[in-house]
Amino acid sequence: HPKTTSSYAWHLRSQHNSTLIMNDIYLICTCGIEARTYKSSLNHNGKCDGSQFSLQKVDKKVPSTPQCILCEIYPLSPRAYAAHLRIHHKTTLSAVWYSQALL
Image 1 (cartoon, rainbow, N blue to C red):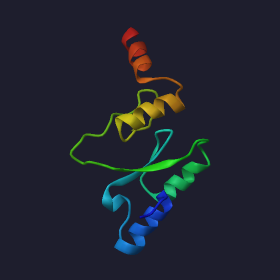
Image 2: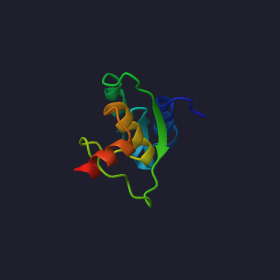
Image 3: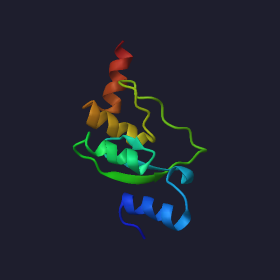
Protein backbone atom coordinates (compact mmCIF):
# COMPACT_ATOMS: atom_id res chain seq x y z
CA HIS A 1 0.00 0.00 0.00
CA PRO A 2 1.27 3.51 -0.78
CA LYS A 3 2.47 5.31 2.34
CA THR A 4 2.59 8.94 1.16
CA THR A 5 0.20 11.16 -0.77
CA SER A 6 2.66 11.35 -3.66
CA SER A 7 3.04 7.57 -3.84
CA TYR A 8 -0.74 7.16 -3.68
CA ALA A 9 -1.23 9.63 -6.56
CA TRP A 10 1.47 7.79 -8.53
CA HIS A 11 -0.12 4.41 -7.71
CA LEU A 12 -3.49 5.58 -9.07
CA ARG A 13 -1.86 6.88 -12.24
CA SER A 14 0.44 3.93 -12.96
CA GLN A 15 -1.62 0.97 -11.74
CA HIS A 16 -5.17 2.12 -12.44
CA ASN A 17 -4.74 4.77 -15.16
CA SER A 18 -6.69 7.10 -12.88
CA THR A 19 -6.28 10.28 -10.83
CA LEU A 20 -7.28 11.62 -7.44
CA ILE A 21 -10.01 13.74 -9.05
CA MET A 22 -11.45 10.80 -11.00
CA ASN A 23 -11.79 8.93 -7.70
CA ASP A 24 -13.23 11.88 -5.74
CA ILE A 25 -10.19 11.92 -3.47
CA TYR A 26 -8.80 15.20 -2.20
CA LEU A 27 -5.63 16.09 -0.37
CA ILE A 28 -6.32 18.05 2.81
CA CYS A 29 -3.57 20.09 4.45
CA THR A 30 -3.38 20.41 8.22
CA CYS A 31 -4.23 24.11 7.68
CA GLY A 32 -7.59 23.16 6.13
CA ILE A 33 -6.78 23.88 2.48
CA GLU A 34 -7.87 21.20 0.02
CA ALA A 35 -5.83 20.29 -3.02
CA ARG A 36 -7.66 18.57 -5.85
CA THR A 37 -4.44 17.43 -7.54
CA TYR A 38 -1.02 16.35 -6.31
CA LYS A 39 0.53 19.24 -8.27
CA SER A 40 -1.61 21.79 -6.45
CA SER A 41 -0.51 20.27 -3.13
CA LEU A 42 3.11 20.84 -4.16
CA ASN A 43 2.31 24.48 -4.95
CA HIS A 44 0.80 24.86 -1.48
CA ASN A 45 3.89 23.43 0.26
CA GLY A 46 5.79 26.70 -0.17
CA LYS A 47 2.91 28.76 1.26
CA CYS A 48 2.16 26.87 4.45
CA ASP A 49 4.53 26.25 7.36
CA GLY A 50 2.76 23.12 8.56
CA SER A 51 2.06 21.65 5.16
CA GLN A 52 1.16 18.01 5.70
CA PHE A 53 -1.53 16.45 3.56
CA SER A 54 -3.87 13.56 4.19
CA LEU A 55 -6.22 11.85 1.77
CA GLN A 56 -9.97 12.23 2.04
CA LYS A 57 -12.63 10.55 -0.06
CA VAL A 58 -15.47 12.93 -0.85
CA ASP A 59 -18.98 11.60 -0.48
CA LYS A 60 -20.98 13.30 -3.23
CA LYS A 61 -24.22 12.60 -1.32
CA VAL A 62 -23.13 14.83 1.55
CA PRO A 63 -23.28 18.57 0.85
CA SER A 64 -19.98 20.41 1.04
CA THR A 65 -19.33 22.95 3.74
CA PRO A 66 -20.10 26.61 3.11
CA GLN A 67 -17.55 29.26 2.22
CA CYS A 68 -15.46 30.55 5.11
CA ILE A 69 -17.17 33.67 6.44
CA LEU A 70 -13.78 35.35 6.90
CA CYS A 71 -12.24 34.71 3.46
CA GLU A 72 -12.80 33.09 0.04
CA ILE A 73 -11.94 29.47 0.95
CA TYR A 74 -14.46 26.61 0.75
CA PRO A 75 -13.22 23.97 3.21
CA LEU A 76 -14.06 20.42 2.15
CA SER A 77 -15.29 19.11 5.47
CA PRO A 78 -16.39 20.43 8.86
CA ARG A 79 -13.06 19.29 10.30
CA ALA A 80 -11.14 21.13 7.56
CA TYR A 81 -13.33 24.21 8.18
CA ALA A 82 -12.43 24.22 11.88
CA ALA A 83 -8.73 23.69 11.09
CA HIS A 84 -8.82 26.50 8.51
CA LEU A 85 -10.32 28.94 11.05
CA ARG A 86 -7.83 27.91 13.74
CA ILE A 87 -4.70 28.08 11.58
CA HIS A 88 -5.41 30.88 9.10
CA HIS A 89 -7.61 33.17 11.19
CA LYS A 90 -6.43 32.24 14.72
CA THR A 91 -10.02 31.72 15.85
CA THR A 92 -12.62 29.00 16.41
CA LEU A 93 -16.07 28.25 15.05
CA SER A 94 -17.75 29.25 18.30
CA ALA A 95 -15.85 32.56 18.47
CA VAL A 96 -16.77 33.42 14.88
CA TRP A 97 -20.43 32.52 15.38
CA TYR A 98 -20.55 34.52 18.61
CA SER A 99 -19.02 37.62 16.97
CA GLN A 100 -21.46 37.32 14.03
CA ALA A 101 -24.41 37.09 16.44
CA LEU A 102 -23.37 40.40 18.01
CA LEU A 103 -23.56 42.25 14.68
